[in-house]
Image 1 (cartoon, rainbow, N blue to C red):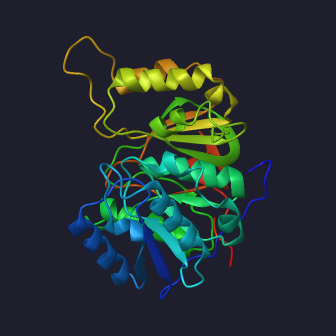
Image 2 (cartoon, helix red, strand yellow):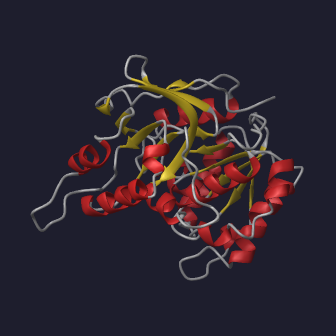
Length: 316
């Protein structure tokens, strides 16, 4: 957000219409329907996009359809916000097909995580729009979403105050510091695999002076090691002001020993950085997840509550 003017979307209100798009893989129809019903029960109208009813191999329809769906949802005056159906794979194929001028001139709440990371990074760096790393229709809202997840989601997309401290669910262990310290910067990040995949492309993530948050699912420790090492070799972790890593979901030690644990990998790869590093926060592929606004100012401070969002993400 340093080189482009920040744009904040209007907060969502009861009665607003949420457009649902499927920029990556196709979701389970029953979960999609349940997620739509859940949104309606919260007081929103819902308009599914064309991409939510298509399938092409592991994609939710052709690239042109999925990209056009996103462009149309941003352009449509009767759509107030956009929530993605699910992740999977496919969003990187859309980056050259998005109409960033339409997105910039029609700012709206845009929510998703996992594979949606590629869209968050690209949209944020090209338009300045604050977007939201948060729950999706089929992946979360169709599965009896926990109160913790709803609390952060609702405060992030409907509120007019900064989210404040990002704390773990009541029964979960607190996050842990790999490197204590204090830092401040704009929040950026998302799924580790997707961020690594942007390297060497025009859509490469800019981490300079930012608070970088990373999440992952279903990756063996050696793969997390490899991706973090790639970010180190690219200078991305050194450029960040601070780093936050989530509770890595289903990232168990490989069946064949010997191996390191994820905790050992994080300590080894991140422990030598001269900046604050916090791990085991809930914002990724877990039922409990905090919604994080990308592009707003945050602090990472051992003595001030860990990760704290100090800037509101929406503008009336």
